Image (cartoon, rainbow, N blue to C red; front, side):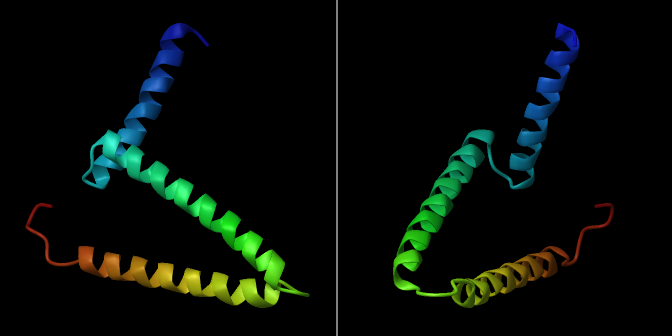
Length: 95
């Protein structure tokens, strides 16, 4: 791959990330900050949860983890549905 093609591919990737930040109505820096903070929080939560559950749950861990995972999935889908319903409100002509 020559330099022009490599530069073009890198530019398109950066534009795709900026488009995501733009869709959220955020600057790229703010998006990066909150995305990174959320990632760190999620990883720490999973590590601490696994450590605590590993020491307190004897036997089959799936008996506890499956209902918790399903609850998280249902809540996420409900929030997604609410957001879709909210954004599907009346729109100005031509939008």
